[in-house]
Amino acid sequence: MLVTVLRTTLLVLAFLTAILPMRNASASDRPSVVTAIEVVGKGDAFEIDLVVDGQAEPKLILLRNPYRVALDFDGTLAAAKLPAIDKTSLVTDIRHGLVGADRYRLIMTLSQPVRPKLDVTKGETGVRVSLRLAPGDDKTFTLPSLPKASASPAAEHRSNRPFVIVLDPGHGGIDRGATGEKGTEEKAVNLAFGLALRSALEALPDIKVVMTRDDDTFIPLNERAAIARRAGANLMVSLHADSIRYKDLRGATVYTLSEKASDSLSRELADTENSADRFAGSEWDQDAPEIHDILVDLVRRETEALSEHFAIQLVADLGKGEIRLINNPRRSAGFRVLRAPDVPSILLEMGYLSNPEDEQALQSEDWQKRLAAILARSIAEFAKRPTLGSQR
Ligand SMILES: [Zn+2]
Image (cartoon, rainbow, N blue to C red; front, top):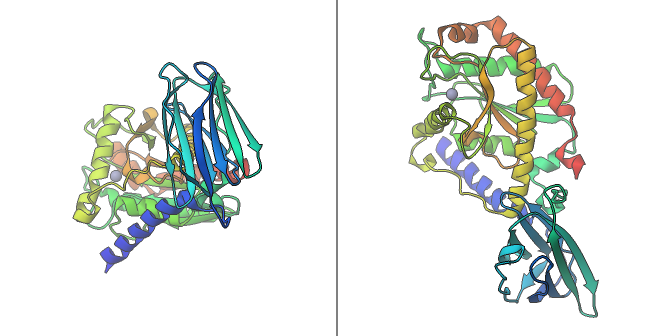
C-alpha cells in the first residue's frame, strides 16, 4: 500500500516535472510557424534571423557554464532547417526543437560571453526575428529575469506568505543511519532535533513548517524532495548526524548540492547518504531522470544561488551562536535528497556520531534547543529576503 502511494507520488512528480516548462503556454488558437532560419552575420558580428508565420514574442534566455543563448517562442511550431554554423564565429553550436506541445526553442552554444540584441519586425502575415550577437564580457552577460512560463509550483507559492520550510530528519524506520559509540542512533537524533526545531519555528509568525517525517518512518530520498516540492517549499533543511572515518573530527557542517564534491570526505558522506535507498527496494534504486530542460536549468541555478545564500548565512550564525563547526564548515556534494530543482535546500550535519563529544552534545536537550534557536533565527532571516517571485 505504502509503496503504491509512494510510486503514485513519484509518477505525479515526474508528470509535474514534465509539464513544468509548458505551464502558461499561450492559448492562441493557431500556432505560429517558424518557416525559415538564416545566419546573416559572421564572425564577431553574428546575426541569426527567423521568419515566423503568425505572431511571435520570443523570450531571450542567457545561460552560463557553458555560455549559451536561447530564444523561446510560445505557441510556435517549426518547419525550418537549421543553418550551418561557421565554426570560427561566436556561436559554436546550434540546436532547436519543440519543448512541450507548442513551444519552440532555439539554443546556441557560445565561444564566449556576448551582448545580445533582439529585434522583432512585424510584417503583413508574420514577423522577422533578428538576434544579433556581439562579443561581450561576463558582466554584460547577465541572467535575465526568469520567464514567466518557468514559474514552478514552488516559485508561484513564493509570492504568497507564509514562508514554507520543510524539515527533513534524515533516515528513519529500517534505515537507522549512523550509530554512535554509546549506541545513539542517528535516525532518533535527527527526529528529536527536527521536532525541537519545528517547535522553535512554530513560535515565529508567517512560517509554515512541513516535516518529511515526524515519526520513525522510512522515506526514500526522492520522496523527501518530492514532499518539499509538493509543499511549495521555500527552503528545505535536511538534518543529519552521521559518522565519519576520522573520530576526532567534530562540529557542524552545512552542505549544499554540487555535482562535484568539495572534498573527498564530503563525497564519501554523500555516497553513504545516497545509499539509504538500498532499504527502499529496487524500484527506488535509481535517480530521478535527469532534466535537461533549459528553463528547469534556469530555475535550478536560481535555486542553487538561494541555497548557497542560506548556507553562508547559516554558517555565520552557527559560528556566532557558538555552535562548534568543523574546518571549512561549508561544503558540497551530490546529495540526492537536495535535488529538487526548485526548492533551495541544504543538508546540515549537526555533528558527528563518530565523535564521543559530539555524540553527547547531540543527545543533550539543551544543546538541541540552542541549535534549534539559532537555526530558527537563520531561517526567519532568510524568509525576510526578497523572494524569487518578487525578483521577477
Ligand atoms: Zn545521515
